[in-house]
Image (cartoon, rainbow, N blue to C red; front, side, top):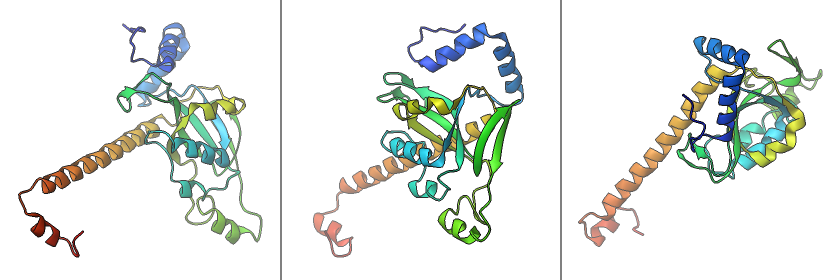
Amino acid sequence: MIDLTDTKLTKQEKEFMLSLQTNKELREEVEAEKKNGSHICFPSFWAVEVADLIKFNKGAHQIDTCFDFDKQGLEEFHPNFDCLLFEGERVEIGEWDKTYKRWSSHSYQRVGVLFLHGKYYGYESGQIKIAFYEPEEGQEKNMEFLYPASYGKNKVPKQSLGMIDIPLHLLNDYEDRRVNERTFHISKSYEKLKKQFIKDREDYYFGVKKNKLKIQKCRNSNRKKKSFKKSFGGGF
């Protein structure tokens, strides 16, 4: 039995649960996808340019979450190529954030990012339509130099996936680029990538904590100050 009064349920989670109760077609589709190993239903996605994603990434670096991109890495993609942002978990201010196990102090939308190496031009019968672009004749080397992630032998594979937590107020301005079609297209990859991100974050903080304990243990040792200074070249 679903308890919609649970204070740790987000608004998005409640809406999805109610949809499952009232929409038989959705319920059957979700159950069928689960049997195929796809456990996440993405209710919509946004089609934006890499230039927009760079703006979103700047915002993501300003909030205390672990899902974002390296700034330099994004700039290696052609800024006018499209990427699709699949609607994952949305957490608003004051809601319980299950990823970080805390009450959220900011609103954000987690999305799975699919890099297209081209332009999105439609969604039909569950299929994403993409127009792929190659450099103009004679411009291959120049484009490969400017955008190595989009061109040349070292370019990122087509439809590579990433993840980012976008501050909600930034994404709200892109409703006209939103496609309200539910899909399970990247479910398996999304789950795998999310688990890896969280593990990396936990490993990092475990390492920091372990290092702090080592430093504290050293500070609390019975060695005299003189011998402690001698253990470092040139002292302090």
